[in-house]
Image (cartoon, rainbow, N blue to C red; front, side):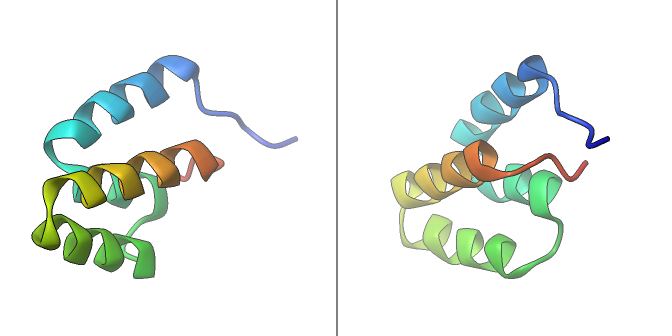
Length: 64
């Protein structure tokens, strides 16, 4: 039976993604290509990093 992440946890991650997007991607996916892509996007601009982090949070099954 797969475990699900609580909606409260995701809401907190969405809020944290506004300030530190790579950290939320790391919490969801670990140190994978998505994490490094998010760091590059965050360096290029705050908004692309946040949007990518929100995308990862919404599409992840919950790795934590």
